[in-house]
Every structure is written in C-alpha cells, then in structure tokens.
Length: 76
Image (cartoon, rainbow, N blue to C red; front, side, top):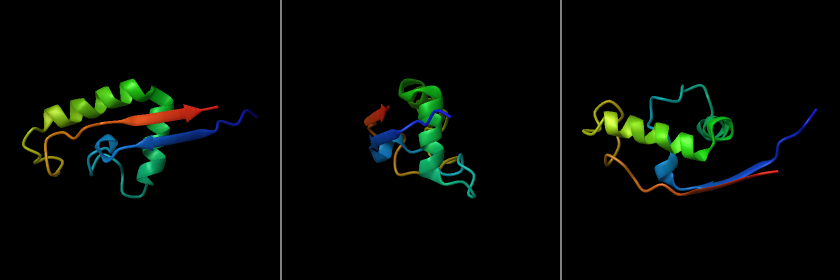
C-alpha cells in the first residue's frame, strides 16, 4: 500500500466557511483531504466561489466577504 505524506501551512483565509464542513467531521482533516484531492488551486477557486455567492456574509457568517489566502502544501 502506498502511503502519502502531507504537510501544509495555511492562513485562516483558506478555511471553508462554517456550515460547509459537517460538524461531526474534523475541519482540518477535511480541508487537507480536499486540497490533496483537488489540488490547492482548484480548492481556492471553490472557496472564492462560496465567498462571492455570499457577499453579505449572511449564509456563512464571517467578519468580511473574503480574506487573503496563502498556503504551502508539500506531499511526498
């Protein structure tokens, strides 16, 4: 069985809005899974889609429409 090692450093702007991740699932584990599955660029595109669809922050409460996003993902 092939084992994937993954390490990442992400800013809080990379977090999915509350309510998208089911409460019974570990948020960081889910985020890691999505980034590995989709790639970081596609993950960011999806996140921006959620943010643009809710500019008033009413569906997914947060302090501002969008936050800066930075991340480094290393897998080996």
